[in-house]
Amino acid sequence: MATQSGTLYIVATPIGNLEDLGPRAQRILSEVDLILAEDTRHSRKLLSSFNIRTALQAFHENNEDRMTAQVISRLAGGCDIALVADAGTPLISDPGFKLVRQAHEENIPVCPVPGPAALITALSVAGIAPGRFLFEGFAPAKAAARRKHLQALAGAERTMVFYEAPHRIKAFLDDASSIFGAHRKATIARELTKKFETIRHGTLGELIEWMGDNPDRRRGEFVVVIAGAGAGKTGKPELVATLEILLKSLTLKQSVRIAAELTGGNRNEIYDLAVALQQDIDLPASPARE
Image (cartoon, rainbow, N blue to C red; front, side, top):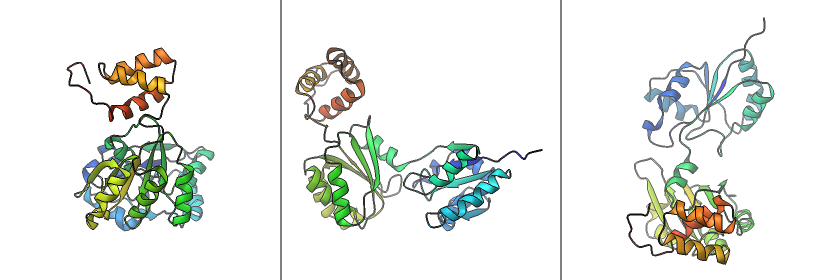
């Protein structure tokens, strides 16, 4: 009789605040036979906080190719295994893709245990249109490659989300300002959910000036959300004019619905444009507004 394969669980862990590890994630991590972790020392501290004593094994970018076959073999033999990142959701700028792909090819169940992700957390509080976005992860570390990468995104109309390290954040912002323009709207989300969490919104030029005022503001892990080239008043003139009129007297949802009916445009794109326009319009106080 064939042995039933185990399940590969992809478990999100806190990006800072330990209270964000939910009951289901705690249960899964307690019940599986093995936990794969980028840094076992880091993950052991997290697990110890919840009295979870499951065996840990290192699984990171330097051993992923070698380890994948071993992990697949154990899963095929009936072991349940969880994959965690040092923080946040695995595979999002972290290792694990090859393992998940191979598990699917071997018909091994892959089960997500959702939770925190820095990019979604930052996007939710950025004040920049979140409907359609590009996640770019970490930009290239070397200056020439980074500028080339950003230049290729200069015309992108969707909101862009980047991760950045503290020792490169100033250079990244300088290059982004130079290529996208100092007046492009952006938000810096630093040390999300941690003691020194900072969320700062403004233009790229303003953010560079703000960061330069205090070297402590360059510490920690960063998510940078940058408005797309289509934000503000760069859309179709007729649509922009229509939305500006509607937004002054109607709710956002009503304005988007009517504009879509009048123009036949894509509702998601109209929504993104309307959210961006709200930042520039002097809206009167009204109980009818959202």
